[in-house]
Image (cartoon, rainbow, N blue to C red; front, top):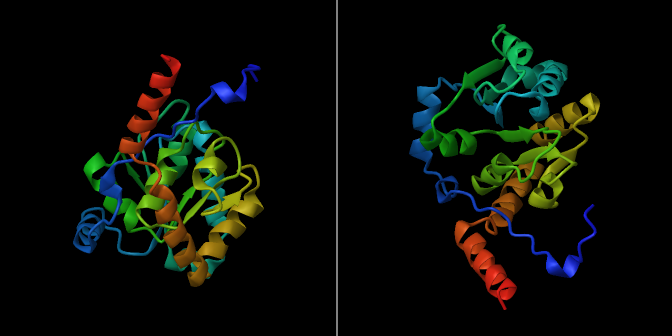
Length: 215
């Protein structure tokens, strides 16, 4: 967009907290009890605002086959953001199978993420997409959007969907939930992919960039 020489540009990815890697089973059990997550669940984590596309997620969950909705809850985690009132109203309206937990303390998020059957992030735009990298690090299979930075972060280690397509989003969720071999494969490959997102690597690459820039 800016016409810069690509050879002068380094892309340095963020790191993610090591707490998301190798979450202990007893910690998962603790948060499931604390938040009354009795059933297997599909998880979304993010601020509730239009860009995060939560309304499409709610519509996709409603379109899942009844057997899938009976087996899996949809758990939505995140504080209220701008222009969120209509979406919050839906999240708190008593929709069958939908659990809105609101803000969850940072120390509980790794176990909530690791305990999910699948993580879905149908965002319309992201500069990085921390929740996707965190879910991969936690060994949770990921479904995310095929736009903005998200394909770069997930690579081919997630199911990529058009975030403007209700049918594609619904099909992506069912595909992962109903194909255990795919879910296991995504979990394994996602964990390996997330190994590149460390603050140590970010700091090392940043230092090297500034040393080159300074000559």
